[in-house]
Length: 460
Image (spheres, one colour):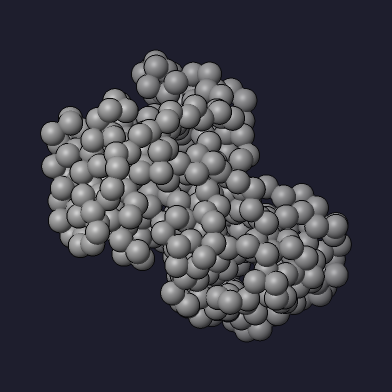
């Protein structure tokens, strides 16, 4: 995208006023999306974003400037703007970059931009037909495909000159069931760091659409959830969103470095039940949250956050690593070139345990089974959270009894970690887009089925 000699000139310019580190992040992204509503393709768009961001450090301070002009003059002008905000001893000596080739562990077979439009439209129709066939109570179906293909180049004043290609594909199906003057919805949205082979090897769009429809119909006939303190069984997959939000964000250096985390200063201490091990892994081939290198050029890693209940690692980006005196962990991420990176999660999950899923429910007595989690809110400083349950069931005498709707799980991350007394053996992940100061990025959340001995359930 840019020549090594151009990057060298821009980096030299960025350090002229006293910065001690400079970085260029250049990106060229091609994106596409198709949407179907009411059985008809409603929109089909393609976009392209191209530009670069230049970051300069001066001690623990950082300046970020971005531009869509990646010519030599455009990059030098952006570098000067960044340098103008820094005052110190000028950099001595020229920067010389050495190109390094990033090994790719995410093979792509069918580039999404190359897949025929007719094939994409048929996938949408397959979702629509499958969801509507599930029940006559399905009144509306919305089907979507999104995909993007991004080339990035990263260069910095330490001599790094490297690049990467990232390809993502995702489907989404939302179904609405209506009856008795009420409506309920269900959804499914799997994706991966893959091309359109995703729909040949990993995702059955009709099966995912039926799942969304079943959830909508089930919740349409559910009764209101009772409120109170009770044991809660949280299923795998997107159930991991509670760990992601209530605990994961508190383990990012962006919070820890400033003391804005309930887990700051607790490395080596027990923060969870001894049966809990949690991992943030960016090395899983073709997974939604994986990378070859992060957005600072650091190779991605498998990072054990909690091992047998003990806090072992934080997720660390370059700048906050300076503040903490810790090395980067390949966790520096950003939405695109218009954002400066910071520490972010990748594929974050509670590792499989040794408990049988049937026994987890059978030994529960009376409680709540949260089969599918929805959105919520969390305070990363305190870990206090409130999450909706999209699909829930009451457990009576150790058996799943009947569906309930309107349930919410309320608690504090550090307390929930200590109250996990069962961890199942079958772990799977689900896809989401995580928003924070460096924008919205693809992340996987996951876990096996777990049980929390007592949790506040909001309901009626």
